[in-house]
Length: 122
Image (cartoon, rainbow, N blue to C red; front, side, top):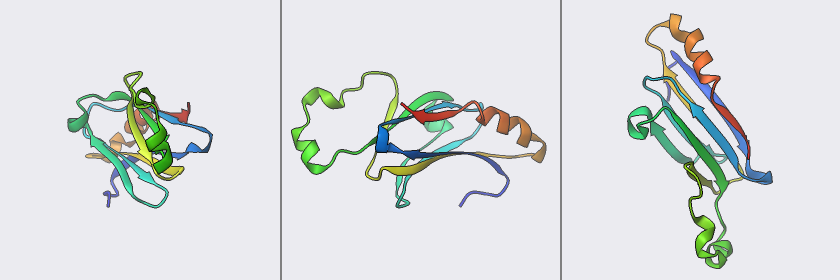
């Protein structure tokens, strides 16, 4: 559970039409990013201390099925850019960014900061 005194950013994704790219531009303070499958399984979590950066790209892709895993070419899973990659067994899910508030007066500025983060089909 997340405390009520926080600012959230939410990206609902559907991988039916292909990968989704989340471009994070997060404030220089404590934050948590969590990615969940449609079934509620936690696929990925990271916070500001673990990531070491506040600006990054996270690429959400559909996890390959068993047959695709065995028939994939060696280079098909190669990292071609600097994006982090999260593979989801479900085609739908959500990514959630959480930033706690130490003072309610910060809500507007933190919401503005989180609005710089984008999530779109790529």
